[in-house]
Image 1 (cartoon, rainbow, N blue to C red):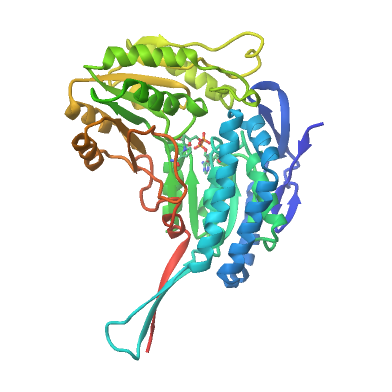
Image 2: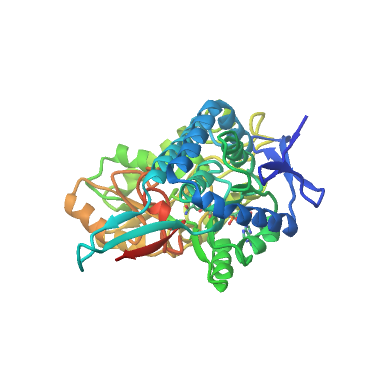
Length: 482
Ligand code: NAD
């Protein structure tokens, strides 16, 4: 039996007026339909928006500590369902079990973190013009916001938008990606169980090209927070800006790791390897380019190829090193890029093929792939591949390595592996990326510090996570009292 799920609007699970549903399949075993969701229409999106708008004033007047208490209870509700949420995530997105469990834990922690933030929004400052005057700021809710999210972290990313939005007193309409909407749904069940008032958080599933327009242009929407590809994000930013809506788009990456001669090669291989092949390379912060100093280039290539070949690839439920791609389309895109790399003249050092055989035939598996002799102008060095494919580029010295690292349209995450503090500091000063790391992999984020990109990785106006994560969802009112 395949379970069919509704939209969550006004505190009720409802069917789309279309009467249509779409199916979600297990990427490790594509014959398995794991669930069905509502194929919603523009009118479904508009009803959800109307519902959220109607609930906004009341939610805004709920005291911060009460809003925080709801988020705390939702965090606890998710904690109680951690194993179920992890399995749901593995079955729809394909992530290895331990990565999925880590992602669910992140969502639990994010709700608890912003629960606390809800207690102390706003502040009082002393006036410079007399003791009979008072100045204060209020961080008021922005209003009603839409949250549009991708499939690759289908519980953590919706959580890191929902929690600050709700903590700050906004009402929301969320639309998850259609290949993985089920993990996001669990967040709404947890909020419902936690006693969130009806209509405050709403969830609508369906095609982005159908729902995108009302969700980004509706006159009653005050802000749009989007995470996804740079191509879709650019159109979302343009549509929202047209209506003078606040908009935040977090988008793709082509993240470099520079490896310098002073690096411990084993440490460098681990940082690059986990960054490139963890989550099947399906992370916006994936280490897709290694820029390696010529003194250690050959040694690095040999070691990273050996590392890639040693990885265990398989169904997420078996907790392998590398799981399947999320969908046939993503698998085909990665295989196409492997062909592009070969035709551009890069040297294939490891992987480079779809995996076949009993475990693999019904899933979307590619062996972790390493290309050497990559020129930074090649498409495999410039375009986001979103699969387990690493391009290794040779650099003559630090200056060249840094120039190559910055020679990309993207600017999300970047790292350097070095024992030289001056080099590390020079890198931190000059790298064009929103996240810069020394002796670390490009992937992996802490929830209490800001996250976002430079250049075409982000609209670069607001950051997500940490204290900064609240900024997008609040409007500051400055109050003078005489
Ligand atoms: P996508 O852009 O295809 O879809 C993202 C969301 O936008 C989905 O919910 C989709 O249904 C919706 N959408 C599609 N067309 C739309 C339209 N015309 N208007 C409004 N919404 C529309 O991205 P994806 O394939 O789901 O996710 C992968 C991408 O996300 C990668 O590029 C990755 O780098 C990026 N990503 C970025 C971050 C970050 O924080 N920077 C984090 C995770 C993923």
